[in-house]
Amino acid sequence: MVKSALRGKLDESKLLIPTLHFRHFERALVKELTEYFSTKFGLKKTAIRSAIYKADEVQVAFEGKLLEYGKDILSRVPENCRPVVLLGRPYNSTDPILNLSLVEKLISQNVMPIPVDMLDLSPYKIFGNYRNMYWPNGQKIIAAAQHVAKTDGLYAVYLSNFRCGPDSFLWHYVTEELKGKPFLHLEVDEHSADAGMVTRIEAFLDSLRGSEKNKKREVEIFRPRPSPSSPPKERILYFPYMNDGAYMIAAAARSIGVPSEVLPRQDDTDLAIGRKYTSSKECFPMICTTGSFVKKMQEPGADPSKMSFFMPDHNGPCRFGQYNQFHRILFDRLGFEKAELITPSNDTSYEDIAGEHGAKFRINAWKGFVVADYARKIHREIRPYEINRGDADRVYDEAIRKLERCIEKGARGLHRVISEVAADFMAIPVDRAVKKPVVAIIGEIFMRDNAPCNGNISNRLEELGVEVLVAPFSEWIYYSTHRFTRDSRWKNDMKGIIKSKIQGFGQEVIAGSLLRGIKKLTDHAKDVSLHDMLRLCNSYVNQYYDGDPAVALGTSVALAGRGVSGIAAILPFTCMPGTLVASVSDSFRKDHQNIPFINIAYDGQDSVSLDTRLQAFAFQVKEFALAHNYSVTEPETVKG
Image (cartoon, rainbow, N blue to C red; front, side, top):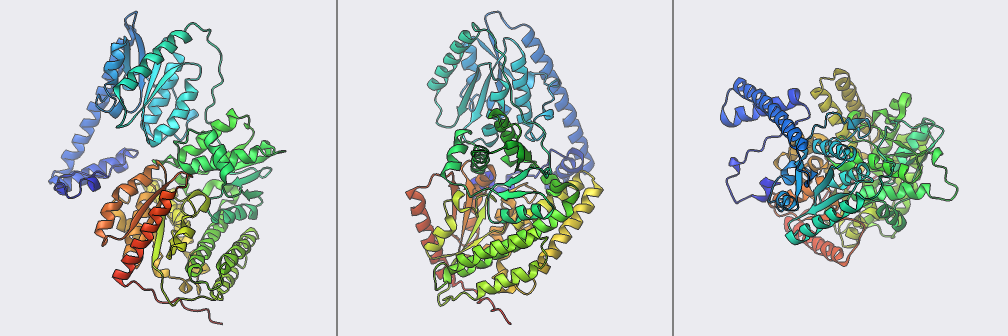
């Protein structure tokens, strides 16, 4: 992001931008630092390694001194001075510019601010509940909140930032941990003013004086608790709708005896419920799924004890891994403690979802994703050229039902079914006299092919005269398997390496087998392999960045060279990975002949301005296609 922002303003060779993985010190971080500084400055690797270990030793000693200093300060707080803990990340909670001189303001009110780094938090083992708190600063903030809650006379000021992704979830956790004890939450951005902050501090201190006169009451604190990774068969497993691949994974679950359904597509009621129980600062997909889950449990006659909801784990840095943690808190708070969440892990590419039937489930689900992606691709290629409006949608809807039934029966005869689907599409009368420019839709996996949750972007763009190419859902499964292999190497987990390699090979073989003879019926030149995505993304984001940006930007680079005339990136408002993609999109555009690129940050609120932006984008796309004389060879017809 910094490199993109400073492009053309300085000598980029002076920027030191290594890719570092602090989670794996010996097997990743030390190697990465050694290789980078050895290559950049010609230093001896032994000297670099020695410096790393020395620096680590000094840092540990420094952190120990901070704890001793904190103990000393807290042991002799002046009688008329209130101690408060500054909850927040140290790079803003202790920076006078970023926190608007918060420390000085507190001291002027006879308040002693204590940084989190000066608290001994070792007694607080938060992973018993917050098992998936992968943000190190989040771990400290939650532990510090527990310390404040437990310590009489100690209070907290929580400093966060507008649009900060982790804060949107940490705020919920901190609010629970400090339930029954007042704390001050200050959200700061570049528009914040001194006067408002002083007023908030004064009001907070007044509330403390009032609360201390009241009798302390017992409160129930709701925390995340462990959830199973595979579903019990006596419950119905509900999958949130995100695209039509959801019907395939539900069918795969039924194929191994797990009763499963896909929840209805999100509507205004889902969004209203989701916003009611969230702050609306979280990811938009989290708001959508929250609404869908709660609406289902609130239906007349619903029995939460017979319900399970699918919400996988994720190991960060994206907020996705916090969804099921928040959902567990919310379910329990609303009295739905008997409802279960099913949380398979992306650490193993979700292989643990079906217990002893994991292999069969995974294979059937994978087959479903492959054929659903194919049906969606050919549907999008036919739809803009159909002579009789509605033919492509009708054939597509029938195809999804046929494929779902086949997957539920164990995927027997699936190649025949998908071949029939392809033939049905190719039988649709079309007029291809004029080739329409192609727009690739990339971005957040839940939203990009989920019309109710992206403003119906695909159809709106088609109505403006372009052909739409939506990135396939299966790319995320390929990517999860790749991460399974890579992380297993870093952990020196030979079993994981072997399993992930077999898994990846199996995926390739199955996909090739299912699409044999019919892949040629689509514009398969625009199919981008994971290898190409990760190879091509490095100019904008390192391939080892975990999450969507590497996949989205690698896909964009590949497609820019394969005849697309525009790229639309779908992101939830405040999305962390999406913001990264948006921040480098201008550099990408300039590097690729000024190809039109639109970032659509969507939060469920449609507007006239989006229509205007889409119209302008479609015009630019057509001009770009005309200027570059883009055309595509007609797909082959079905034979026999």
